[in-house]
Image 1: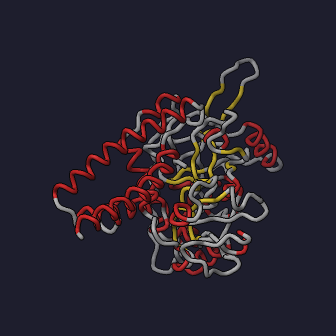
Image 2: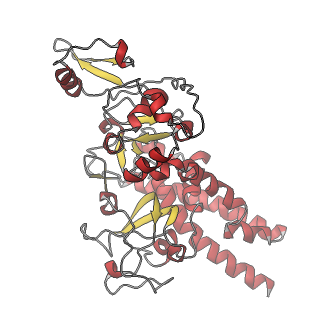
Length: 397
């Protein structure tokens, strides 16, 4: 599934850009396509899939790694879940009955530390709809929360959506409330909220930016706080895309051991809707002893790890194809003639990919290109790499 892809017409799916190919490849290249990841334990982040053929029961969700999706579940009904953190491959364990993993059959009955949600049943967002939505009820771009890792339609986030080129990370409202100290950081470092006010005598809505104030500067009327919050809740948060610059980050000087969170308290913002953060926001989090305990209690301790981000994972994926990826390692061992044969094969890939997408468009199955590209590349590189290996070994004998 693609993160923050703009809406597109079905015909646009035929125009596969280099950027879309790169994005799809980096998701797959960050994970091992040949070896089951089970032996690595709970992997910090990897591409995860769910097999609707083997585990259709929503009460027993299971996830599989890229290699198992390619080898053990080839031809099955697969849900592509993008990436998940701290996940161990379930393929062939107790959730699969008599089905055994072909790559690593010796596995524990359960992976108790894995976390599952409705994504593993092919459903997403608060509306619990599939993606792509074959009924066309929700044909909106989807954005992943960096905490719960569920995917949300932009119109269901309860906030103004920042344009993709400005967006780095999003935290949904539910996760913000599970870690309420994040609201304090949001008042300083995140995109400012917008309230959508509907006028009864007009059809259009008006967006009003909520001014952030310190409590001592905001007029208070005892007894009116709850009603004010109710009016905000009834108004909701605007969902119309609007381009804005990131707010200037607050400069708070702290001494070693001093709590940065306490220094930031005083500035408030409406605690409604999802929150969009600039890339640097994690580095602003306090790491004093008490705050570290708070992160653990809220089960968000991974926020202190910069390498946990999707961007860090994708960067590793982009770097690996030119270093350790089996396909590129094979190319480096070839002579010029063999390399040219591979280049011709890549041209065939482009042609086949466009035919593949064209067929999906004609069947009304596609609205965005990247999810299909990921599936196509996953299958293609598995088969193509195997054929290259056979060809290369044959030519060297």
